Image (cartoon, rainbow over all chains, first blue to last red; front, side, top):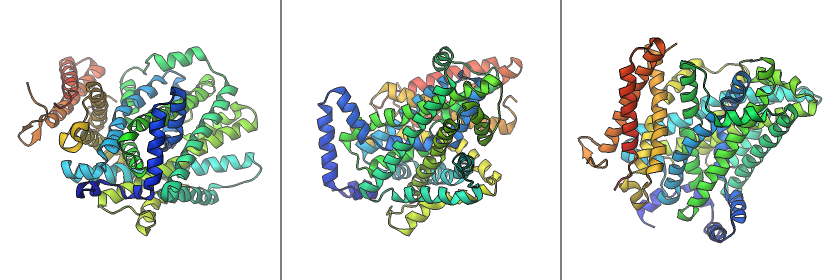
Length: 453
Length: 64
């Protein structure tokens, strides 16, 4: 192995033995010759980083937005989800290319070609690690609220001032399991798959109880609609650009490297992006929007916070068991997001600071558990000045990180003959970058008082 | 024809294209804000959108 190849190899992949990789590669070759259904089922079983990304992206913020959207607009804004996630797929495909054909660690290459401000700072430390720490406050806040609301339905009290310990133990165990060999990665990825299945089944049952206005749903999915005026522009730009961001790109790229993915895994990686990330993300959001469209929207209720939305919905779901299902599905959301963000944060801190990731080291454990500081949300609100600062930095830097990824994808020095040669792929990436630009510009215009109020 | 991957001063054509696209996006949104507020700034909106579309289609071209 050349020195450059050695530098590019990701240490977490060393936990995957060459025999395991050979077996997986042989399985992929066998699947390529198999009938479509066998191939799809095989890919579903072998996928993982896509589910990890979906479970991370489906966080408290995304679900709250879906609930608010369903309560306020009914089914009308459903089309935004597949459009926004669809645009994000182009960038995810770039991450798959970096992993499978490039075999490089993207932050290292960003540092080399675009400088440490873009790589280590914007992508690693702020775009991923700081986001994981600050935004985990929201996961703790909603997670402990949900456990507190769920417990009485099961016949006991479990206040959030106590139940945060349970939340911390479960999420810390799963976070630290990641990277402990192939088995540790499998445990976390399997948990993510199970959690997504729980969300789909439980929210699906709730929707079956509430009922669906199929005509309105089909219209909402396929006919674009936005509130009139500037509210519509804001909603479109924010939704389109916010579905997946820097953390999702980094998590997918490095999770693939940790699995030891190479050239023969690219088809699997693309399948994983569509069936592990796109479909679960869109379907879970659709189910939640439809549940709220069929309940709170019908009766004209529009609470503003997630706990209020959940409390307002519960009596409308009918029997207690259906309310339990809703709370269980909703609880899976902050748990999986905390785990995913913690893993992404640890990866990003190590890459940004040039540390070798060793999951047995104290340094890794501390980095991975930093987001657990979010338990303070049980007593204190998030430090607003910090949230504002991070949100501002994110708004202004996401597009620059996106530019960097686009440039790497088209750079002969980085990918050689494996660089993008597809006009459509670049076109989709450019549309996403333009939306990210718009987020940054609208942020600045708002500060300057130029945007419509 | 401009080669996007050649260097023009400090950066490649692709980087310059991204910068021009950002400026075009800003112009379009400035025009949109004015148009939504009181129907003004329509020329800014039209030029900004046209430049944005041009940049997107130009930058979508893969390297040779």
